[in-house]
Image (cartoon, rainbow, N blue to C red; front, side, top):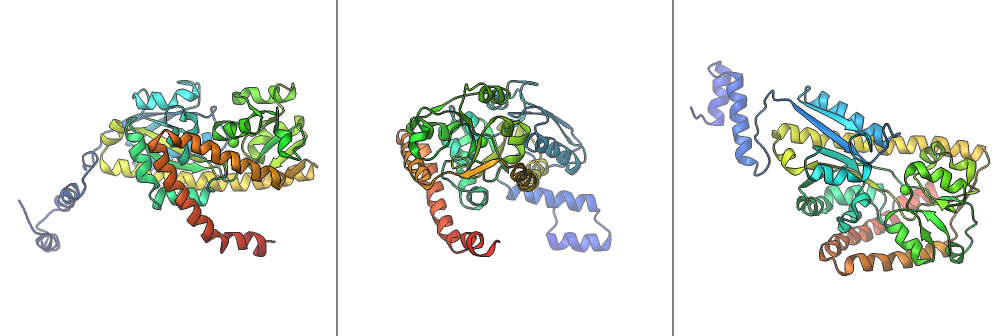
Length: 373
Ligand code: CA
């Protein structure tokens, strides 16, 4: 039976067409309109999925967000998707998250792009770039500035669908047992600092050291490292760094707003009905807002308490910042020189960053310098 939409409404009003038939008809129109994705059929089929993560089990805020996400997806889907969340090491080691999801060992994963920078260098621009965009700007580039299309394009060759899933906000520069008064003070500095930030430190004559989260405290206490960055006051205090480091420097020039990501196995994602695909994407937006809000609330609370305790909190000298920016540009040139995809992504990133910076000169910057007291 084929009826025009007008005929349908008339039929509905007269009671000659049942509501389920009407809904099915609307859905078949949606199928024709929707060019990609799985079947647009609301079915009772249940999906039991696994999410592997790069975070230690129950890691505050970031790990918690994954569980909130699973709960929310279950609620929104009326129990049709059950996601079991695994902390790093519970199902696979944290850094195997990427390959596990790609190969279908788990349907989805949560982490940050710099954990898989060795596999996709261009992916780092969707996570964190030293001297790059903050949370607001990066989110805007990804969601409405053309970033998302490039991100999906980049990950599809790895059989993955990326979904933006949180941001840490501006991080702190880290805990140091050495005063940093000039760029010379970074020479020979052994510091736990991952990703592009580590490469920048190398250019300054420092030595980035790779340490798992659980090894950092002892490393700093015993002088295996002279400094470490982590996240911000809340997480850093939980790690015990205020007890064993002399100076807390700011800002985290290497992470001005690190985006977190959900990665979903592309075939598994596309096998879902459209409504469930939409639920996975939409729930992630809510979690993103929650993560950033929780970071803001907890970091502000703990910073106040660190100040009360008399922790020596200092800004990096301008000279140090200026020189690190020069080294950063060199590192980015190296990353993009022989990688046309990375060069294309960075060109879009940097063009957006420049426009956003010019806009914020007249808005955010005046808020921070003239309005906020
Ligand atoms: Ca960090």
